[in-house]
Length: 327
Ligand code: NDP
Image 1 (cartoon, rainbow, N blue to C red):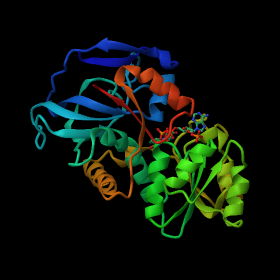
Image 2: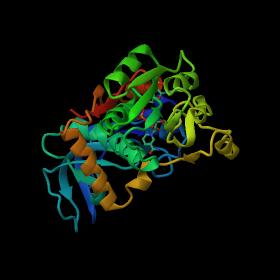
Image 3: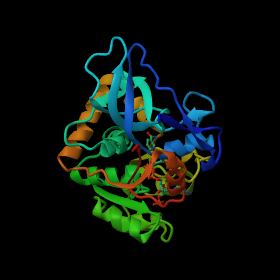
Image 4: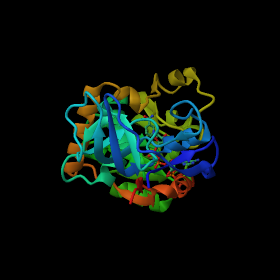
C-alpha cells in the first residue's frame, strides 16, 4: 500500500496519522520515486511543533526533508534519470511517504557501494556539516573549534571531517556515553555539558586562548556561553536551536567578547543552485567512500513508527543518524 505519515496539525508527536495515497504522476521536470529510506532530522521537529512553518505553509502536511529510493517514472523534459536509478535528495517536506514526486533537479544519483540508508541519512546532515566547516567558518589545519551536540546526527559527521582536516575539535554532549562516542568520531575532547561548565572546560583545554569557531545548534541553553569560548576575532555559527531559540542576542556582545563574527546559516541557501548541490554532494560521497566520514545509522524505525522516532530524538535518546525504512 502507498501511504504517507501526515502531520494533521502543529503539536506533539501524536499528530502523525497514516493515510493511503494515490500514486502521483510526475509532471514536467518531476520524478516519481519509490522511497526506501528517509532520514529523520531535528528540523522535522521544528516543522511539527510549529516553531518553523510547515513546508508548503499549512497543515495537514507531509514532513521530512531527506530520503533515498528508486526512480519509478519521469515527467516530460527530465534528462539523465530513468526508472530503476537509485537517487537521494534533501528538500523541505514531503519525505514521510512510501512514494513521492519531486523536482528532478533536487535529486542526485547514489554512487555504487553506498547503501540507501546511508544516502538517506547523509544528504541533509552531511551537506550541513560540509557547508559549516567549509563556508560558515572555513577551518584551517591547526585550528581548534567547539562543536555542540557532538554525538548527534550532524555532530558525528562533523567530528570525523574536522579531524581529517587537521582541526582539533572539542565536542559537547549530554552524557558520558555520548562523549565516549564523540571521542571515537574525531573529537579530541568532549565535555558533558549537563555536568560540567563548558566555558570553564574550553578555557582550560585551550589554556585560556579560546577557539576559532563555535558551531552551535543547541541555542538557548548554550548562549551566551558559546561566545565566551571564542578567541579574539572568532566566529559564532548558530545553526539550530534544539533547546529553544536564542531570544536575547546582543550585537554588543560581539565586541565585548573580542570583535567576534556571528552567522545564522541554513543549508538550503548553500544548495539552491544545482551546481552547488552537485559539488557538495560529490564531496560528501567522496568522503564517505574514502572512509573519511562514516555515516552511523544508529536507530532505524519503520515509516509508520515515525512518532517513536520523533520521541527518541526529542528526548535526546539518539546518537548519530536516525532513519525510517520502508519495507
Ligand atoms: P541531533 O541528532 O544533533 O539531535 C539534537 C541533539 O541536540 C540531541 O541529541 C541533544 O544532544 C542536543 N540537545 C541539547 N539540548 C537539547 C534539548 N533541550 N532538547 C533536545 N535535544 C537537545 O539532531 P540533528 O543532527 O538532526 O540536528 C542537529 C542540529 O542542527 C539541530 O538543531 C538542527 O536543527 C540543526 N540543523 C541545522 C541546519 C541548518 O542548515 N541550519 C541543517 C541541519 C541541522 P545532547 O544530549 O548530547 O545534548
